[in-house]
Image 1 (cartoon, helix red, strand yellow):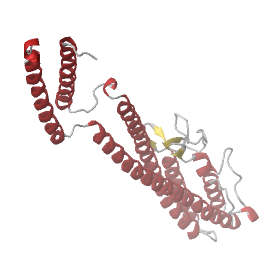
Image 2: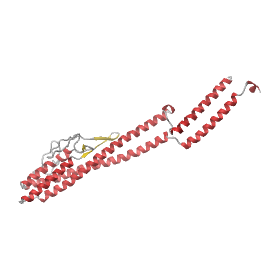
Image 3: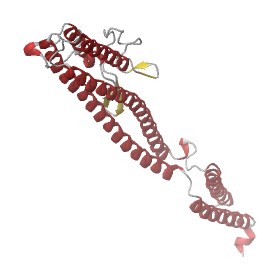
Image 4: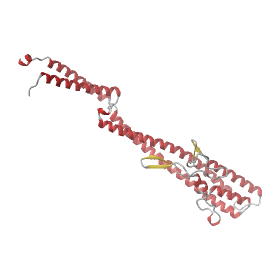
Length: 306
């Protein structure tokens, strides 16, 4: 095959252009700090980087969901612990008049105390977090009126905390303080102290029994208060367990995010020490190619005949 001067020149020009492109690409990477500035530069790496970025973004969304869920559950936990303290006081008050009293002043004081404790329970039942009633489900209004009637919903407010994994961020006020919707029957006689307990209704029944000095009714009320206290404690434990789960999931997602971001950084961010060496090598090679091409192009037919 005959190699002409034109073929030699074209081949030299192609190699020079290729070297210049490599040099420009590396200069661009050093300038931007990115290994892949556009997909056409490296389609496979660009696809991998997009997948990594998508995983990081999904992780950020799950983290945001967990943060919101923790806020709601922490507010709920505080309210439940307050309810637990109220239940302790209710049991103490009921126990202090377990056998009734012939003194109306004593009964009046007990009724007054129970009435205030009931109001406090209702206040806790109307606890808000960022304008959301934590015991009201999807209700936008106060779930409990002053008498303790529940008007919220029993829906579970679930949030996604990982792929295929959710956590409930609320406690139903109707289930908690009324034993259900409609409210459970107030226990008496053989059914006293049985779950579920209509806590508000049981307090009203206990107040009525104290007012009438009904000893058996007071005894039933004490049993109902004990079961009611356990009902609140169960909710406290449930919320505590959900908070622990959220903490563990947040730690896992944070660790995964750090790993993914490290991989992304390794693939995308320029290693300046390595790039500096490569840039020097490409500059040297390009300069040598320019010099060699210039010398080759100066040769004529007479030079070959020599």
